[in-house]
Image 1: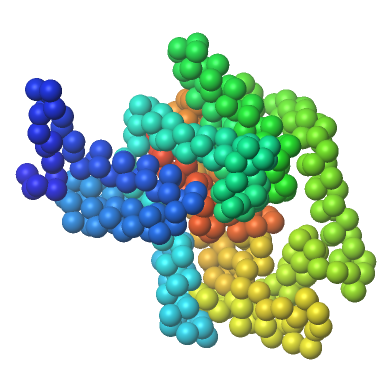
Image 2 (image 1 turned 135 degrees about the horizontal axis):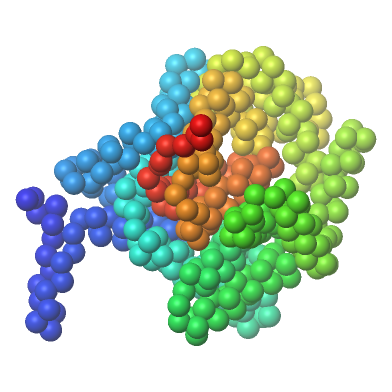
Length: 415
């Protein structure tokens, strides 16, 4: 057995602690989860070390290859391979083609997490690590909000920006609740529920990101629906109305959501409307649609979207003439850059995880959390590129791979 395959630490108080390479890899995943909230360079370092371990260590290499054989992981890599292949017909410089493909390197975490988090205890620790770092940022956000401390950042942007922070705090709220329901000690359960309430209140009182409101709505609705073991659309509808009512009962979310609708209407009805968050998106989507129409089968190729988008805004004035490399809509971006073929591969990859609903084992709290994150990301990606984003992308790919990796079973059809 090689040195890297099993590492033994010396005795501590006459107790020998065994630390194998799988545990080391899990610690690196924990490092990714913690560092991705603020220290991006550390995230890249941890992922680089993970990649080396999975390449050169026989045990991890075998686990990773076995994971890729699962259809849920396989289709993720088919999509990533297509992104690379699309560089063949891209007009972008070689460096930009590579960077576009490499920006999806977060997909490498899928087989890693799929292989490393097979037990409930490991999944629980992953959630605990995530809640620990998010809890730290949560309390810093509250302290900044009440002017108790000054960290050089606003209370709504402790984690990158208000949109990212909102999504991460929504995960914290749902994760704390589900973990609390799966915890025996009553004191710890109370702490987790209080933490969940604090995450929710921060989202509704402090945070201004509409992505956070939408993430909270989608995650909470999904989690409660599946936790109740209900398959009734009526129940889901009532739950959604209840959660939406709670969100709209707070001034800040209500004002931000209504402002978004006003921005959309203004951009549609007035071609001289000033730049706004949602108005900008409407403008991006209109021009991206034209790019798709011209390149609908194979797309523009990796890294070339901005060059074709530039052709669409020639002659325009003011902010509408700005060349964009991201239409702030994940599905349109994939279709425009990687074509209908790439979009089909991507949706097939996502669908493989959704299919888990039908042929999975019992829906425990870990599965419910993974589904909640996936569905919320799918909804939010109608207005942003969360699957490909640095933080949100890692959150969703780590979550689904670690929490939705149970063994598949065949569907039995009654005669």
